[in-house]
Image (cartoon, rainbow, N blue to C red; front, side):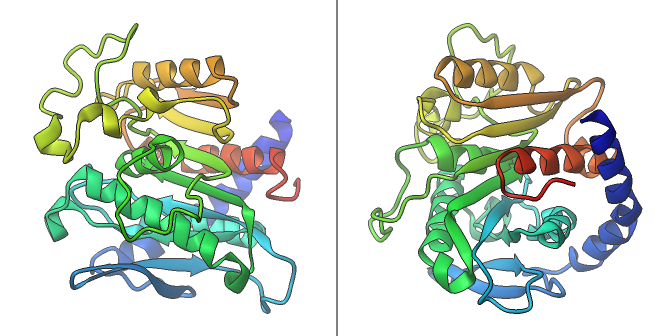
Length: 296
């Protein structure tokens, strides 16, 4: 297994440089233009059209439905670009999944609060599932991923019972079938047995747009949540490592599969920098274990 991961890490590393350069070229404008993708609108809020960009390596959609993964970018619910997960998406599309990067409202562009971001994320996953047949996606194999605030959104889609809108079609489930989380926010309010040591100061109802516990994934963990993998740096001062340790503990106690992969000495957002190839190889292996990708 270690040898296979090492080989996959090498393969990923060989293409990482070119992919990161491609992302940087497109990250300047908003909304971005991402070459080789199909863009569609999944939600319209006022004058804002929220889009997804779809990476699909198939020549024809008549082939068997494929598993999919939806990525949400990070940026503290304030900014960021859907291009953040372009390199991972290109890799996974080449490996045999449909990969999707999604936009959502943020503070700097639409004066959105985190509650609005969660609402958009839930609507996005519902849109993907509702359009699965048309897109050639298996509706029972939809993974959701993200980094930092985007990781929070991915975890929220799986755990939070509220923050939908009246227009949302709740007959279509927004529950992912798997979670791939990179330094995610999982604790937004005090939790028993966890000393936040000042983390979360100022994150209250006025900041979130709802009560802190309403937007805190750890407070809504229950049995039956999707298999999850978390990548996190032990030296992360933006989202303390202790928060994902506790989240993992609570997930396992509820009978859910949850794997925490810690990286000693790494800080926030390391997954797109020093450990890009390593985290992507491990995410690939996790998806292989679920049957979403063929083994290398």
